[in-house]
Length: 564
Image 1 (cartoon, rainbow, N blue to C red):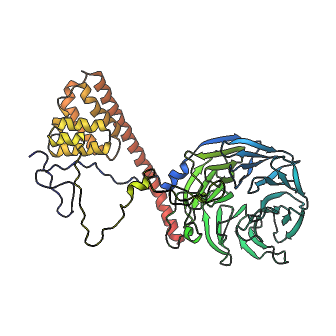
Image 2: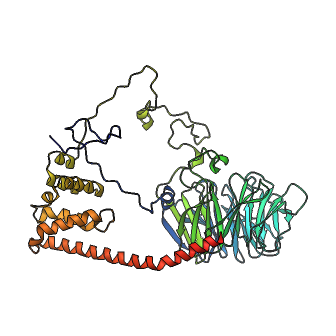
Image 3: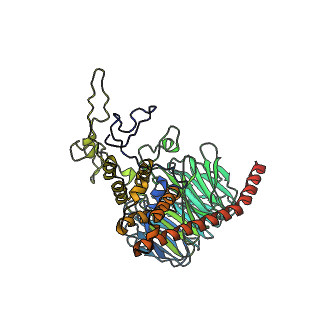
């Protein structure tokens, strides 16, 4: 017999490589139960925003806004200036400081050729981005203008929300106010234009309401009033235009506007006031498009990524919400109260402004192409060239990976014969040694590989043959070092503790009389003893903590049960 006798499970078809009584079956690496805390694809995606550029602003950063066109310039409003940064290099591009008082809500036009800014003095100013000259100045507000926005459909329409409780619609070409909306009874702090309906606007106010305005009729009253339940700090439309998000207090509310203003979901995920929200129409990992999902309803089937809602709060956290079940999928802590958050249209730059004068701009380590720009990795996709013409699909040749997998998904027709190719079994070094019953050599080969799951499987296989003491015996100081290093590194890991305690005991039984003969071996044994002592102290601390937390958890469960 030329190898260990391993009988297959008769209940499992094709288990292992068993083909006969004398055939050798490779040692399979040990498999462990997954850890309780496992990083998800969502977490990996958002952790790819690294290398933050922390910029000291002159005062608290109150507003952030990305342009819609490359290179996606970022307008940052702080104190009496608006600074424009290049989101690619994160370097300053322009600075606007022609304000007599505090500036609010610097917003770039979608083509990045103009910028509109509100201010403490109640003036709305339109700037040219190249010359930095003032193109228009609107002065009908009597108090501070906290929020200004361009219409998503027209360069010639601007909306502003002011502390004088009014929302005004401005015609840039005429240079005058074309509509004044009254109805709020407290400061109007935010305004947002509908993504598809040019005449529809939403505004949030400190009177705890969100109001929808329609410019088509002659009435200046709100067409719909939504009770948020707390002072509203910001509002944003979802890409489809059927849902509206309002934030304020500790809540983020999602409203079904087409359903008559029904409250779809109230999210309470922050400990302090939520100051900003941003809907990233193209952010997050690729979605799983199931029937009836939000991505399918919103028409995002062609996107490379799924929409996400970002919220920033005074508790210093920025949280990412998935828009199917509105659950929190990622959270990031910043060194100060968060006042503004924004994600670039290409989803390669994440900007956060805080109340302690810090601006954080994080970029992805591996920039990805814009999902709406087309292309991806599909050679059959009709890409759009610089001239605007569609390029012909690439011919399938050996220059693309699809060429080498062509035909693999083809199904056999009736009457076809499938010819199976017999592949030679490649054995690793530890398998070759085990096949020849060279247990010491097998253990050394697995230790040289460095994979804990393989080493554990080899040790179990050797122990099953009753040869573990033989594999550990007869070693000099140099040959014993890899065994001791492996024990020292993994003896505190619960997955390997039981096995390695047995191995360590056998090492001490075999070499206990030789302690003091080798300085390196003595040092390794001391490190193992220290690692075991640290692990025991940790277990004692966790046991004491469990005793303290158990009554608190019991009280919390009783309170939750009574509340139901």
